[in-house]
Length: 165
Image 1 (cartoon, rainbow, N blue to C red):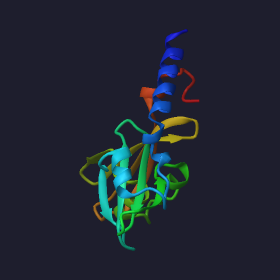
Image 2: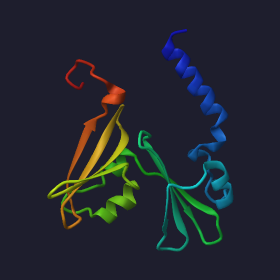
Image 3: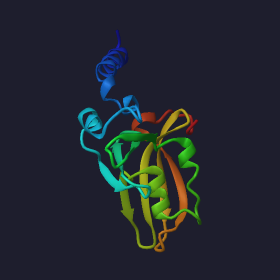
Image 4: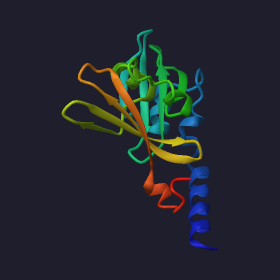
């Protein structure tokens, strides 16, 4: 068994053993907030839900590619579960239209924030197609998205010697 096969086997076993602690195992309308805390620990962020209750965010970063958002109502029942870093959600960010608040609600807390003289850049690590990439949204001083960049993740993809494809 080569090193890659051994690592894959170990990750598979860890995944099977930890299956009950995976965000996808949280069942809305069946899981309580206390059960959510027991299975996943403290959220990386909590914010108010305008319809009542809270949103609890679990960001698996900075190297992870998933951010889960759970809606917890006032009776402390999990009512919704959403994986935020999907291609569909990434495509909803519109330069010239999306605000920092829009992007934060859509994608969750960025893994890194970099401030430049005229712009601020937020980034997330995400799975984009079959590859992993760094998804960057740039904002102007007015908080409006000015542009988007998608960078290949060299940690995962490495230099394939094929010019990127």
